[in-house]
Image (cartoon, rainbow, N blue to C red; front, side, top):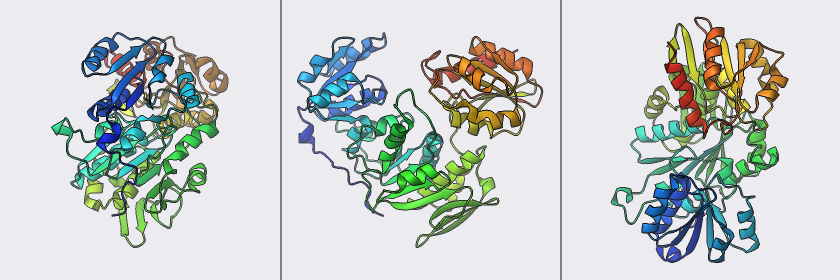
Length: 467
């Protein structure tokens, strides 16, 4: 197999007694702090806002020798910092990060920290939509091929948790592969992070609430290729011109996947058959029916997964088993309940316009769509054609409601709802037997909820209580 990961690997001694500040006490920050403490670093954990749940964490980390700074002036922390590790939720434009730059203090992200210790092949999957599904599918293919696999990153488990620990025998065994979902927030703070296989699924407008421009967003995504060599691979979507453009300067070997055209090296769809062509590595032919997931976008995700599976030497049998039993992902086209002939689908993870468009195109049944949340700057008019084709009623909620009404309100029966519960109630009145009530917000959750997970749980609670 090709060289897996040439990222610099630090020795134990290089981290001993190093003063490292970890910015953010969420799951990524905790994982980074745990790794650093294990390696003997002097760790300071900082958080801008005090929250009740941090009290217990503060006590636990102080008992392990870490310093904790919460809700106080943080500039003084930089006086001793030799390195700053950012959690994904902290922007590189934060004033403290800018101040660190002025003082020549290195700033890296959590995935960069993890990569300095990982000595196994890293498979990094990025894109605007489909990352979590593809990562889980790849992980399942590798596991069914008998491999010991870490699946995480932006998906859930921070990458630092993949690093074998010297003080924890349960984490002492190295994985065969690390499969990581990586976001633009994580990629913007890398230095030497280098996947053996990078996967770029698609790029559509998103995260204008974090990135100043779409060009900045694309530049962050593009960094997944930055440190790859000709011993590495990139798997890209041949149907997305932006993706092809972003990959054009990469040194990695090219593998493409496509729903609409043949590719010289990679995986493509022709009629109801999926064909994989890898000169020198063999071919594979697979019936489209082997894919259990709904929607053409998931066929594309599956082809990306097949590409990685073949590069890793997975058997056809292992890949087919994975494709037929794709691990379900809560809040992503999740069927919640069929009540009085109406199917309720939770797609709370649809946090941008393109995700909602793909969700809509997955249904042939008439749809009542619940849309809205915190506006991320997406173009809602991109939903017009799909709405005119299959949506019988549109219910809007949240901060983005006025703009959604302005852009879509004349195209379909549209109403505002005061809450998610009110939206479900109105959807029930609009829907008939055989219809789908689809909750796919195309917005983030932060105007009304802590995150998309809490928002999805609330939708499911309301639907389950219908009687």
